[in-house]
Amino acid sequence: NAGVMQNPRHLVRRRGQEARLRCSPMKGHSHVYWYRQLPEEGLKFMVYLQKENIIDESGMPKERFSAEFPKEGPSILRIQQVVRGDSAAYFCASSPGKGTGELFFGEGSRLTVL
Amino acid sequence: AQRVTQPEKLLSVFKGAPVELKCNYSYSGSPELFWYVQYSRQRLQLLLRHISRESIKGFTADLNKGETSFHLKKPFAQEEDSAMYYCAISNFGNEKLTFGTGTRLTIIP
Image (cartoon, rainbow over all chains, first blue to last red; front, side):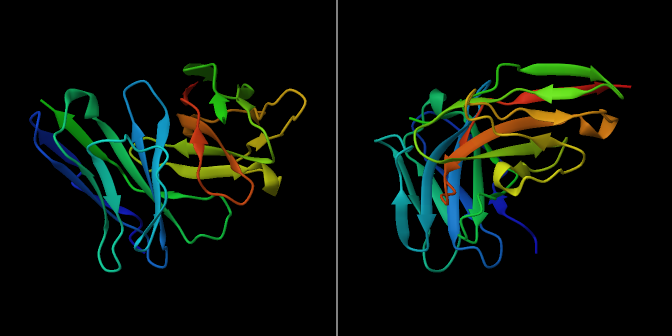
């Protein structure tokens, strides 16, 4: 089991461009979580998805950010019209949804906005 | 709202000395508390959860509801314990975690 795979690992965008971050959960996991880590801060919850459904998006900024987890393929976190403040590490985690509290994390995608 | 506070950003301890990483929380309801660890060049991973009441790699953590604390302890530090440690909280049975800002533990040989 390769674990949670995130790509790209590093992404550089200019202000106003779009950023797409992908996450493939561990095999057998149907629950995906996205977290953002700003410099000097802890991981902040963004969104929780199950296949084809957004369960909790209470941590997502109201504008420019969206997430999906289609029936086939990876989960995608999309940031439109990026601004410098979006520069951060974005982590994806998956779980089988058994309520144990154990999330399996990817290595993260580091977004830099110039 | 849930909140997790880790007051120490950095902690250095000599090898063989006791370690205590502090974690305080604020929560209404039945919280579940966790410690996650990130070793150098590795992914963030679960170290232990309070409900399991187990010792992992010599670490233990006791949930103190009166003091709303969940400090991580180890009696004798080892060099391989150097890592970033995050305390986290969730609703019972819910896997949406709220993390603290983390403590970087360095074990001095």
